[in-house]
Image 1 (cartoon, rainbow over the protein chains, first blue to last red):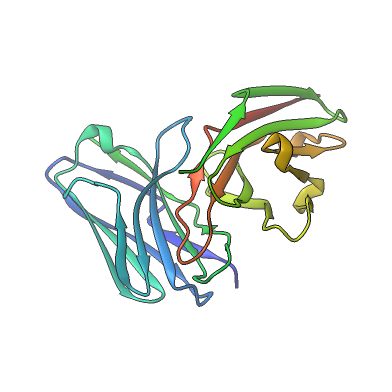
Image 2 (cartoon, rainbow over the protein chains, first blue to last red):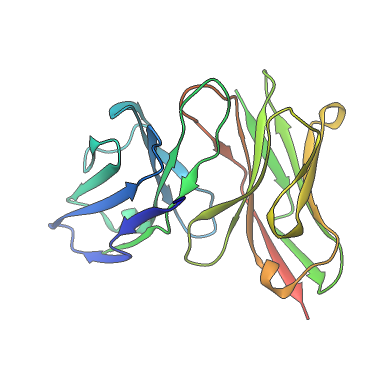
Length: 114
Length: 114
């Protein structure tokens, strides 16, 4: 199974709402990633978890709160978002080691903030 | 620091013609290089990767890329374009080890003309 799943596929939320994005993989990967992708742009790294610990936070605003409950799951909690946060949010996973391993991406959650 | 530059944000080819997407990298250490493809409203899918085992790398869907250290290039080619190849293509670089902090290029949108 080389699949990364993300739910929901689409999400519309108001600026005062609280919502969560979910990501799951069963490939035994110990690194998981959140990316934000705006239209016609490459993915921008937001967070990296390695062995369930937050390893990288790319200066992301606190209205985005990541969580890694176990090695297969990754959540992104959203609160008080702004319209400019509307984007495709991608989750990815990879092995961890001395070599370089490709990242496996999920299909993304299309987020619209109204 | 590592970076990749993709020349040409849009490339148009006729169906059956050669596809050539250009990528040049900059890295202070031996790089690991990737090409990913993204179809509309989907996540990224790995086409191929260079990890120093061989300079000519074959990937999925008939794509291949050649690592040229002297030219700091990793161009993506396919001998004969198919309509289904129309998508966004991203070149990416990482230095490897541990979790992967990948730097993506700005992307090239490939249009295939029937």
